[in-house]
Image (cartoon, rainbow, N blue to C red):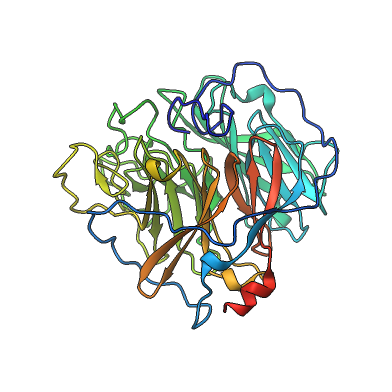
Amino acid sequence: MHRSLLVAAVGVCGFLSGCSVGSNRPELATLASPAPTTPIVAPTAAPADPTPGGAPSPTPIPEAPASRTDPVDLSTLGFALAPIADGFERPTHITHANDNSGRLFVVEQAGLIWSIRDGQRAPQPFLDIRDRVESSGNEQGLLSVAFHPRFAENRQFFVNYTNRDGDTVVARYRASADGDSADVDSAKTLLTIDQPAANHNGGMIAFGPDGYLYIGMGDGGRADDPWDNAQNRSVLLGKLLRIVVDDASPYAIPANNPFVEQTDSRSEIWAYGLRNPWRFSFDRATGDLYIADVGQNRYEEIHVQSATSNGGENYGWNIMEGDACFNPSSNCNRDDLEMPVAVYSHAAGGCSITGGHVYRGGAFPSINGVYFYADYCSGYIWALRHIDGKWENVRVMETRMNITSFGEDEAGEIYLVDQASGAAYQLVVADQRRAEANK
């Protein structure tokens, strides 16, 4: 997602790694056969991921409410990935519509969105905008979808994609009355953001607990942020944006955004200093915001913004990469920078972080409050949680997948999509008895 790289370890040229996939549009994929029923099971114990030393302690954030007084030892759990559907072509995102339908929606890079109900993919796509999406670059394409919190009432949803000029577009669409398909002619463009290069497009959009739409923007591409976009608050690149989409044309600015009416800053900005926040998510129980920011060539990082934040955080790029100085390479000024709560090095296995979600489902209470994320290149999956006043980061699975996105269903269960196989999976605790015994 952040550099030109042949991912030899997994034998594919992947979406997030930045190598060329050609300019031909893929043919419409079909679900050739039912997904296998045997889940992919992780080793029962995995080492904790080392974190580079020498950095100051991260800025404390409020701890989420504890789910138990004696938390389970995550390294002893048997995690697994249970297949739910396959046959997707370069999937980039998976989510739900919050409409009590029980459906999941899978986004394909070329410009399609498919719905899944009871393990079956719909015979026709929910949305097809391949005619307006540029997906020839590895980090271009239809990158995410966000359903309006009142989708069941207003049938509105929003997408983030790369247009034929190579620029980022955030647009609103409307679904049919039965919610089974979208009207392509209902498109209303909210934002078009010029992209100086084909990579570092960000691509994630999501509604926060406050009802505002959050938009993740990369720094504009190439290496090292050559245009100094991430620290420049007069541009939208390298930022997390927050806008109002209700009763606004095309959008409005929340009155309490941190840089409203500052002449040197764009009012849309909620936070800055980001390199490529490919995936971020809100903890549905606490409202805390987890941002996974793709690194340059040494470190991948996760930031956690408290639900009580007033915005305006500077997450450090390109002054820092992870918890290490980048520009300058030593003795950088860390004043007023927010340190990541978790970092892993490329030497530890990986090259491109894929942010996930905090588990809040009911099926596996032993992992309530645990944030799961992955690395696109290695396929490793980690579990992160705040416990006893510090952040614990444990590697829990080795999948050999190219994981492009995590997602939730309406009940808070966690899913992911694998670009290499085109399949969607549910994250499960394979041995629930072991989990219950370790409470």
